Image (cartoon, rainbow, N blue to C red; front, side):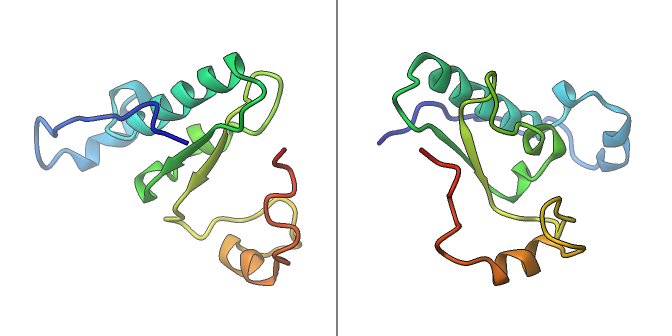
Length: 113
């Protein structure tokens, strides 16, 4: 158990929220969450016998991280505090919070080693 990466930044300018949709992810504040996941994933790739989990606050609830499903190139898992009640892929027409409420505790984490 331990911490492998911390992203620290400070806001350079206030009041630029309206410009964020036109910026690439690398220029957004939320990029720190993607960098954090990528750092965890690099460790997971180099230490396949370990379970590596990237943990994010609600600001990490971004598609660029959510699309990092477990695969041969994405070995780290992620836990993200939910910000948006998103649609789910596996549960019939339920949103995320409703799907979690009906999920059996036995199934939680079933894909973890």
